[in-house]
Amino acid sequence: MNTITFRQIFVYLLTIYMNEGDSTVTREVADRHFDLCDVCLVLWSHREPLPRTYYPDMKQLCGVQFSSWLKRGATYGDAAKFVYEKIARENGLPTRQIDRWQSPMDRLHPNLRV
Image (cartoon, rainbow, N blue to C red; front, side, top):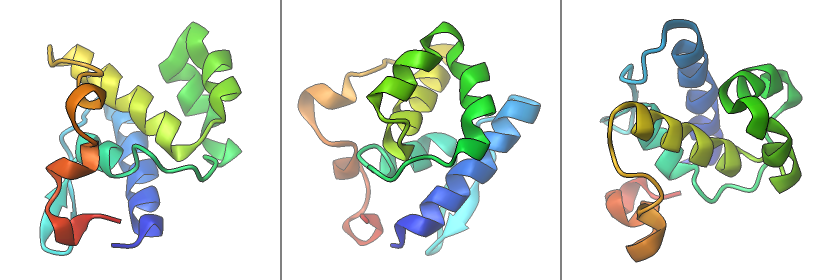
């Protein structure tokens, strides 16, 4: 899988989430549908900086934590972690537990790992 594809899907689905509040919209990659949380897991450790174009969305999402997010590096991976945890909290799912026992990539089929 190409990380560029997942970065593009991330910003597309993030825009939908910001505008419509819907994190369940999916995009198809290699015959598999990915929603925003799936894409966040794929990009969890990605170190490429998130383009400044998306800082206003991240500022709106992060609120008072925006400056902390910037200090961490403002990468796709940092954005993905924040977005994933926000959606998990909204849906009553556990947060951060993924770090304790496995890499998020371990949850994906081996052919989908980047």
